[in-house]
Image 1 (cartoon, rainbow, N blue to C red):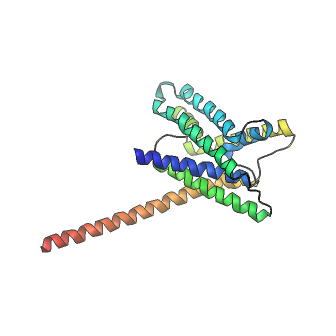
Image 2 (image 1 turned 90 degrees about the vertical axis):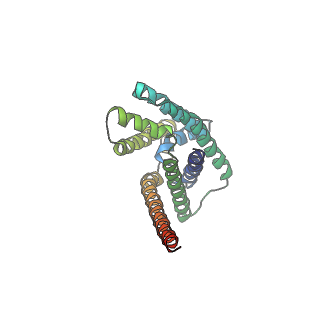
Image 3 (image 1 turned 60 degrees about the vertical axis):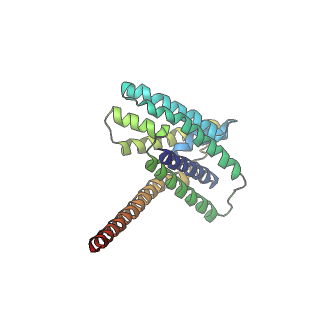
Length: 225
C-alpha cells in the first residue's frame, strides 16, 4: 500500500510538472487545466488555487450522481488534489524564469510537458489508489448512466475547453490560453500513456521469462545434486 501511494504521488508530481510546462510553452494548456488557467489570467488567484476550486466542485458532484454507489474511499481525492494543486503552484514558481522565444523552443517545452503528463498519468494508473476529481466525475457519469468511459472523457475534456473559451471571451474579448498546444496535449498524452503502459508490460513479461528460466536452471541443478 505504501508503495502504491508512493507511485501515485510520483504521478501527481509529474502530472503537475507537465501541466506547468505546457502552460509555459505559451501554446495553450491541457484541457483539464484550461478553465483554472483562464480564470487565473482574469482574477487574482493562482492556477493551483483555481484548480483546487474546480476540482472540489467536480468531487462534490460525484456522490450526488452516484448516491449510495459512491465509494467513500474516494474522499481521499480531496487531500490528493490539494497536494496536486500545491505542486502546480510550486512548479509555476520554480519555472517563472522560463519564457521560450523561438517557435521551436515553444514546441520543445510543450513536448517535454506532454511527456511528463504521460508519465504522471501512467504512475497514477499503476498506483491504483484513487482518481483525481476530473477522472472521478467522468467515471461517476459513465457508471451511473452506463456509458463508455473513454467517450465521456473526450466529451468532458473538450467541454472544459469550450467553457474556458467562453470565460476568456467574457473577460478579454478574445481567446486566451487555448491554442495548438491544447490540441497536441489532448492527443499526445493518451498516446504516451498507452506507449508507457505497453513498454512496462513488455519489461514485466521479459522479467517473468527470466525468472522462469532461472527457476528451470535451479531445478536442473537440484536434480543433478
